Image (cartoon, rainbow, N blue to C red; front, top):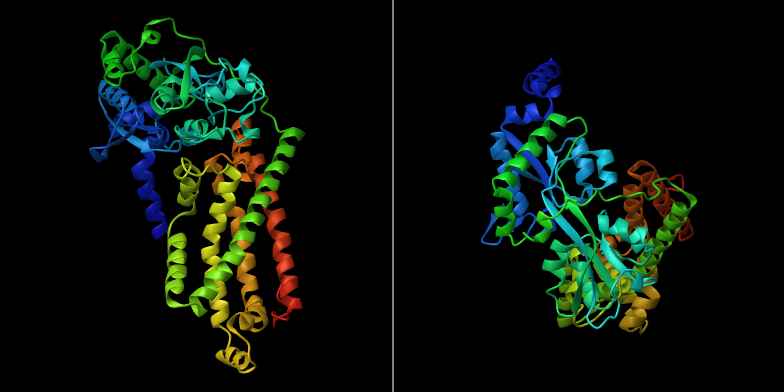
Amino acid sequence: MNSIIIFFLFFFCFSPYLSASTLTTIQKKGTLIWGGDLQGGEPYVFEDPNNPKQIIGFEVEIAEELARRMGVRSSFKHNAWSSLVPALERGDFDIALNGLEATTERMERALLSDPYYVYSETLAVRKGDSARSLQDLKGRKVATLNQTYAYDLLYKNGFDPSSYGGIYEGVQEPYLDLVNGKIDAVLLDNIIADRYGCPLPGVDCLPQEVARGVYVILMRKGDSDLKGTIDAALLGMRSDGTLERILRKWNLWDHRQTESIPTLGRVDRKRQFSFEQFFLFVKGTLVTLQLSVCSFLLAVPLGFVLASTRIYGRQPFKFFAATYVEIFRGTPVLLQLYILYFGIAPYIKLSAIQAAVLGLGLNYAAYEAEIYRGAFLSLSRGQTEAAQSLGFGTLQTLRYVLFPQAFRVALPPMTNDFIALLKDSSLVGVIAVVELTKRMTIAAVDMRSWFIPGLLCAGFYFSLSFPLARLARILERRLQLDHHPRTV
């Protein structure tokens, strides 16, 4: 009975929106919901430094003006930039408005509004570098953001940023790596280059435009009435000078805005899954395995030292070990990766792989320490007393009496931790390491489908974790730890 009542309440509340067009729904709700990514930062859409509860940016003002001309109010919905188009197709918001370049690929998936900004692609190199074009950089590392027109341009000119860790998610990270000598050049929209790259000492932004394009608003296929309304509002904003006023306010108005509109950016890369893609997945799997094994080889001995120090060490060392565990266990591994790769880069320049291994290893050492501490404490105190009565010192007692027994207790959770580490290694994609999950996202974007890349990625992870789990079971039985041999 309750289910029937809930069904009718749902139908009563939402039936007006089930068959109505997006424009009609917007007018009924009185709200235009637009999607964007706060991580894109200034000047697109970002939190007001003086009032973090408020978002500002030139796209915020454009959205508000569009909504005002439609007779509704605007409402921002945060979404990761890389998944704005899928989220729009899902119906998470009415329009996507966040530095989205007009390309043939996007036109196949969504309706594109008339342009609201003309941008150019800016090539930046390190100060003193003689390269002055993409041709001069052949065979070197040129970085950009994933899913941008710049990425397609690089691919078209013979570069493959994914093969050398040249795909980034944040706007400033590639320029920091350029300054630190980890890459040779960066290709990005002039708005990003002018604010996040060119002001950095050590970065030389070349004056020649690599290409020119336009930002547009994306709408779902079928929302032609909404597109007509948005285009009419943009035309009105251009005609009465509102758009120019907004762009001038954010120092974005330049000669490009009054020159002829560039043609649609053409993207014609292959989008089908191929043997080449499969090989790249194998390569990503090997990177994941390498990261996980190296990190665990660091985490296990360090965890053992921390655990034994907390139990058997002297007071200052006990405090240090406990502090280490609480800090590394109490802060996100993602934050630790950022600090190791970008935070200390001015002093210690770690490669992406080195930072990944060190970050994961140091973080998991804290968890390993707690596993070993629990294993040590599970042993009878009489074991230690018996060893001491035989004249064993502390290290000998640990090595010959306690450790062999504690290892048997710790083995199952250690295996579990290693499998967890295999999956957590996907976090290192934020520092431009192309491991298995990062490879999956690149392939999914290229193919415009998450199904096959997702299945393949899951299959590779399973092929790594399942044999490990079986190996651990065999070890447990050989060590006679399993008292229930019928357990699978």
